[in-house]
Every structure is written in structure tokens, then in C-alpha cells.
Length: 188
Image (cartoon, rainbow, N blue to C red):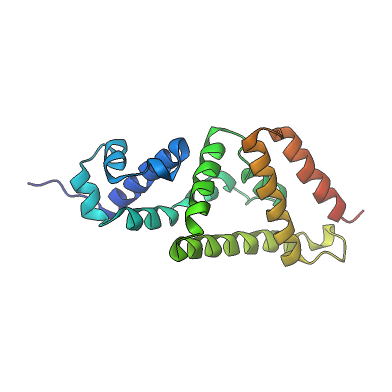
């Protein structure tokens, strides 16, 4: 009997290969041939699931959020601080995720579908941070608006993430700056 293939699992396997290549060589290194080799399948198999490189890249952007969710998963749910720190490239997995995301951001500037995936993901992340801030409302200054503060915190983390990637900020320094900002919005 022929082997049964889980098609969605195979698509995720191909997307994971895209992410590994993008983390190592940027999107310039992503080709159907390279992805097939990285995924350990034939080029024809990749083409069976994706008719073009663009289709494959667009699908891969839909899988980026999974890495973030894994990094922030805790039994009781993350605190605002935990979530922000999880977004920083502090270890090899975080660095890889940040490199892949940055590679796709450049692509999103020219691809409206990928840009839409980023807008959706950012909106969901902003909503999650705002919800955590709302839960902690009694611990915050009364002037803090959770949605506005979520936007500010995500912008802070994005800048710090790039600084850590480029090596002009250490992970500890980035965490200290997050802690400093959180202390400034905390009720005394």
C-alpha cells in the first residue's frame, strides 16, 4: 500500500525548511531546489505543494507566529514582561526567529499578502499585550492606556531586538531597558 502523507504536515515541513534557510542565508537563499534539499524531499514534492517560490514564501509567513507562541507559553500564561522578553533574540532560537522575521519584513514591503500577514500578526500581538496590561490595570499609573502602551512596548522591543541582533546591545542590557520602562508605568 502507498504511504499516506499528511499534506498539511508536509507543507509545515517545507515552511520550516524555508525558515531555516532564511535564518542562515536570508530569503535570497530560498529556492525550490534549496528548500527541497533542506527538507529532505524532492524538488517535485515541493512543487506539488507550492506552484511557485512566491506561494511557498507566502505560506511560510503564516507559520512565523508559531515560534512566538512557543516562546511565550507558560502554564499560567505570560506576564507583560515575560512576553516582551520572549520577543527578544536572546538565544539561538530567538535569534533565528528574529532573522527570519526581518528577512520577511523586507519581502513584505513588496508583497501585499505577506504585509497583510505581518499586520494581522502584529495586531494580535498588540491585542495580547494590551489585554495583559488591562489585567494588570491596578498596578499601572492611571494615565496608562493599555492599547497605546502596547504599541510603545512593541516598538521598544522591536528596536531592542535589532540592537541585540546587531551586537550593540547585550541581551541583559535590553532586558534592563524593558524593566526600566515597565517601572516607569507602574503605580508606585
